[in-house]
Image (cartoon, rainbow, N blue to C red; front, side, top):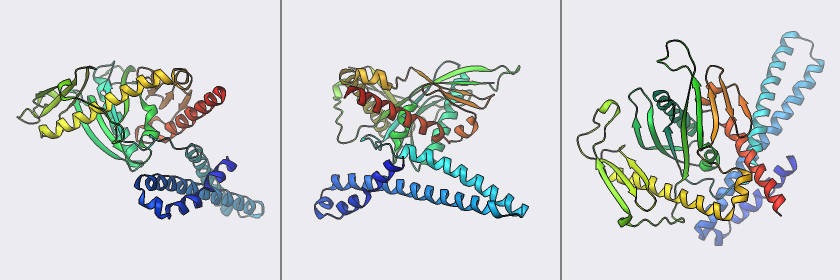
Length: 359
């Protein structure tokens, strides 16, 4: 990994030089691409320099331990060494993910749609738990979290919840979250302590940008307005502000009742609808040009059961990469990198293996 990282970091001065080129500065798109690469390489250098510093400190402390005889001082240094080793392991994992080359879609705004599946009220409650988990994760990444629409459940949580994420690396880290997520735990309503199994589904969509035109004709839309209501039928307001938009040719539907303004709700519903249509178009295109690659690398089919959350054992299992962690409580607080990092590395390696075998 050292050779790879040093090779990547050798480009940093070249990127900085190009950013000072007047021709590049006048080309906004080219400059933004270089600025993004510069930021990526600078963060990698920061982690790499910190890793070198930590390794040096570990070596110094271990040399000191060879001659130190005072028991209290030895205990203090040994404790410091353990903390440094833990930091080293974290940095190595972060660098392993960071050296994966950026993808053009990495930073694109992403829309996440979570729906309750089997399990009734317990599934809806878990939707709420996952919304909170992703909100916490977004906060740790300095991403923007924007609710688009949701339907509350009488028992708590949500029957469905859609939100938009924007920020550096949003799609890079979220794209493998699509699929069926299974939860095993004792519901609050269970009096005999029996573990129930429920499921939710998650769809992860890229929000189309200006360069990706999604043509929607007004004649292909059916727009319905209705009165927004909360859990238990409690009216959020007394006007027909909620909007449901149906794209007749595809049958795709989106809705929004988050805002009190019908105009704002329609705008958000259209954002979600454009993302769904663009996603469908991408899937069709991938089927045409990369069916073999998709079957070997993994299609990210959202009907596939990808992960199990076992609360009694504090265990999380990602079935695609045979990953098992006994830190579910941390994950539910938003510490998702310990799951997502290995996924990003795994699928990148699978793509490399396929490309090498195809060449």
